[in-house]
Amino acid sequence: MKRILPVFFIFSVFITGGYWSAYSNIGSIIYFYNPETNINNFATLKTAFDTYLVNHGGYYFQPFDDRKNFEAVIREKKGDIYLLSSWHLKALQQKNVPLKIALVGTSKGNTMQRKVLSTKKDIANVAMLKNTVVAGAGSQEYIHSVLKQILGKEQEALLKDIKILIVPKDIDAIMAVGFGMATAAISAESSLDKLAMINPNQFRELHGLGFSEKDYLLVAATLKKPEQQEAQLLEVLRKMSETDAGEENLKLLGIDGWRALQ
Amino acid sequence: MKCFNNRRAPYKRLEPTMKIIDFCKVLILLSAFLVSAGFAQSSKVLIVNSDNAVFRYETIATEFKKVLQQNAYQWTEFNLNSHADAEAELKQLIQQENPALIYCIGTKAYSLARNYAYNKKLLFSAAINWRRLDIGEGTYGVANELSSAQEISLLRYFFPTIKNIGLLYNDKFSREYVETIKKDALALGINIINQPINDAQEISEALNELLPKIEMFWIISDPVVLSSKASVQKIFQSAQQQKKPVYAYSDVFIEQGAVLAISADLATIGRQSASLALMMDKDKVPGGTVQSPAGSTVTLNKCALDALQLGFNQDALDSVNKIVGCDK
Image 1 (tube, each protein chain N blue to C red):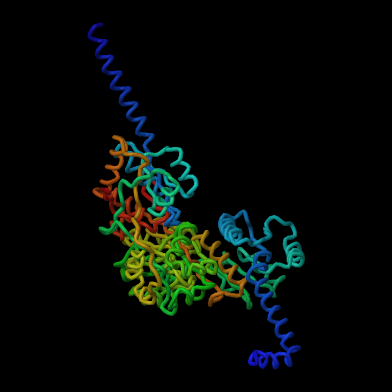
Image 2: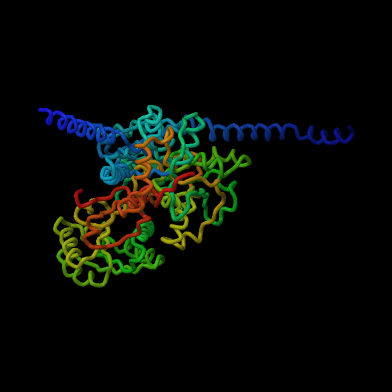
């Protein structure tokens, strides 16, 4: 009996410890929302990231297509890691949400991007955009905000005479200009490189009328200094690009790696 | 002062004329104001939906209404499927409401509205084969399908090295479309090898001849090529035997084994139509009567790609809506 009791005690500690450890991991979720794209790929993202994360520590991924719901989760402090655009992060920080960047997404070695207002070359200046359609991928609020920044104070009045057409992705927005469905497009500069590759004729017809300020690509943020479990999850995220499956998942988000922000 | 009086003298002489001119100016300004603000606020759009129980139509209608709401426009909705005598009721509604613009979703809605409101501004979308519609002046639309140039550009995004693509078609139904595809593809450095067929019985033989010459087979929406399930099965069986990937215009072919499907995004069709409606209301419509859809939906079949050991541009994954794996 004397021998059985300590063995039973150790066994129960191991079992319950393991249980609680596994249980607490279920609570570790990466929440994702990106107002810079409008592509409905949430089911694919969920499946791809869950499959990867469950096998790398039992974590989960929860994408959102609605800003309010995503922000509600942040307010409830449900998640450990939040993936969001730097534009959205700044907007939340202005509302005193204490989000801090832990990792920044990279694409071909870059952590920053700027948005371009592209038109065909016969549109010589932004004043010519009055009563036209500007295509862009992302939320209406986001595209409006980028357009406002690009137009600047002098041309801000034009905004009321511009119709914004929301399309699923950058490449749709740029091609909408080439194929005549829109007069201008807001897109990432890197998306113009893609157009140059897939349709060089159309690329040559376009020029940039204005540029936004540079900003980070997607960021991974936390509400407080990462504790052990959050640090582990961030490490899993950071190392995703080291495996084929992980890198493929990151490319679904338009990035190819993560870099720690010192 | 003298100078001032001198200026006024001729003014006095022209006073009655100037009053009329001033009055006209006020009238013009007033009407301009009404058009730019007041009219837009109160003008009514009539949405005629062929069948709001059809997911496709309803998605388009929902997005259309969201944009109207954002721009403080009013609308009335009429769903043909909800009325026993839809034709008569629609005619009466058009007379009663006198809408500034009628937005027709689906061919049936457009055909009826065109009959009863030929002198009104008409806008359509989700119409099958819009080129066969009777389109008058003041009518605009958003097509159902992406233009072939859009499809080829996106196809090239995923498979940048593919140079020879083959397709089957019937000359009577698809000659013009195939000519456009060939022209658009050539501009992007892709060679389209097309094989005409007269009926579905010729599919096997045509494929035997075509498949060895190409790197990818393209399924286009041709009623003879896609006349039966057996025809579709034959295409996929032959392509599989000769290890050729199949690209399709719709994701319904993904289950059969197409590696990639690119089609128009429904929500964007709704938003694009709304954008056109707002421009039509202000008589500021850009050139062209019928626009191609501006948004695309992409489905990638990883299972079929892996089976063929076919690589693709991984950077294009940021444009994929749905990835289909072997476990479905």
